[in-house]
Image (cartoon, rainbow, N blue to C red; front, side, top):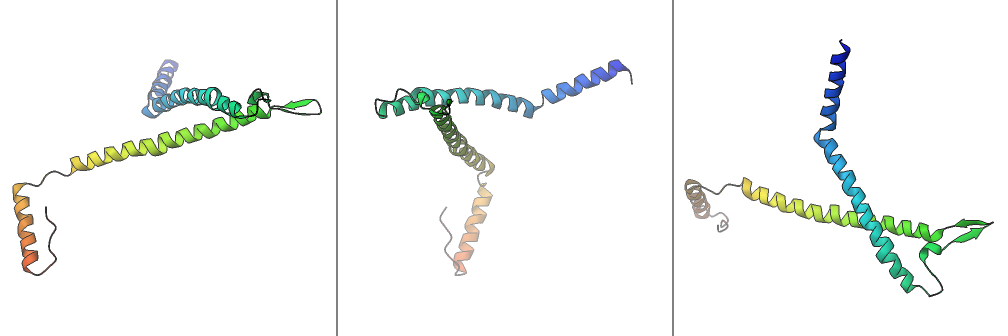
Length: 147
């Protein structure tokens, strides 16, 4: 095969791969995830942890200063606690955003789609339904629902 055709084929394959819908969706998801992480980090670092510091006794300056020293090695426990809380808040926010909010939005869409899928009865169908209900009643069957 001609090397120029091979390069063009490779370029075409790459373009098809890079512009595939799932790859673009993944890239958008990663970007939004990064922005979401910044928001949650700000919530934890600038709102929740300062509230925790305000509640603690005044002898503690900041949770980031919490540390244990063992054999001249400092272990920053406060930073670790902040990271654990950050993870928990990210998980909680994702739970509410994805599991609750998006499932609610999708259920609304499904309900609208179900309404659109069921066309209204024609006049002929309405009359046939009434006749069926009258025949059931006359035969001693259960009374059909109104409507």
